[in-house]
Length: 310
Image (cartoon, rainbow, N blue to C red; front, side):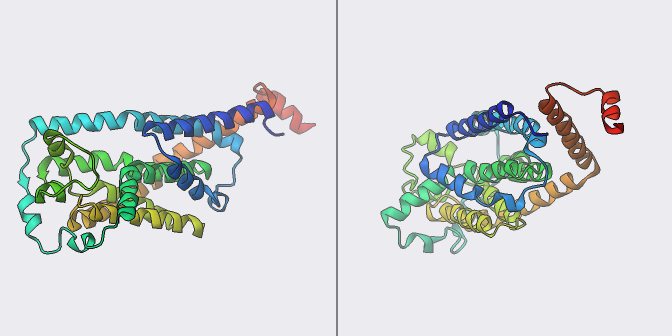
C-alpha cells in the first residue's frame, strides 16, 4: 500500500517551500539555483533503498532545523565578530609575518584579472560559504540516507564553526588586501571600521574548509557527474580566495587540513554506536509514520497479527 496521494503532494510542497526558504536567506540568484539543480542530477545512484514515505516526514523536520540554524547563524556570526573586535586580545599577530613569506599572497594570481573573471570569482566567493554546504546537505536529503545527512552537516558546518573559533580568537590574521593596503576586490564599499572587522579571521580559511569538506565527501559518491560538479565548484571557491586577495596561501592549505580533520571526526561520530542507534530509531519511526499515513490510522498490533494469520 502506498501513501495517499494528497499526503504525498503535501509533503512534496513542504519540501519545495523549505528549499525555497533556504534560497531566500541570502537571496540566492538564478545561478545558485541552477548549480543546486545540476548537483541533484543523478542522485538516485547514491540513494538509500527506502521509501520516501518512510524518510520524508522526519527528514523534513531535520532539514527544517538545519534551515533555522542557517537563518540565524549569520547574525550570530556577526555578533561573534563584533565581540572579537571589542574584547578579544589575540595572542598572536601574524599579519607582518605572513606578508613577508614569499608568494604567500598568491601574487601570481593577480597578474591577469579581466573583468569577467573577477565578476565570476566575486560570485563564487560571495555565495561559496553557504552554497557549498547547502548543495551537499540538500543532496543528502534526496538520497534518503540518515548517515549521509549527519555526516555532511557535521563535516560541512556544525563541527567547523565551534572548532574554528579558538583559532580566530587566538590568531589575528587579516585579509591580504587589507594588510597590503590595496583595494578590496570584492568591492564591498566598507567603512574603515567595517573593513577592520570584515578582514579578520583568516587562519584557517573557512571558505576553503567548507568547500574542501564537500569535495572530500563528494568523492565517496557513485555519481561521476556529482563529483565533477562539486569538485569544480569547490576548487573555484578556493581559487577565488586567492584571486580576490582575501586569503593567504597558507590559509588555504590550513583550511584543507582543518576540513580533513572535521570529515574524519564526522566519520567517527556517524560511525559510533549512539548514532547508529539513532539511525535505526529514525527509520523505525519513519516506517510507523508511513503506515499511519497509508492507512489513515494506527493499526493495533492484535489486528496486524490477525491480518497476517488470515
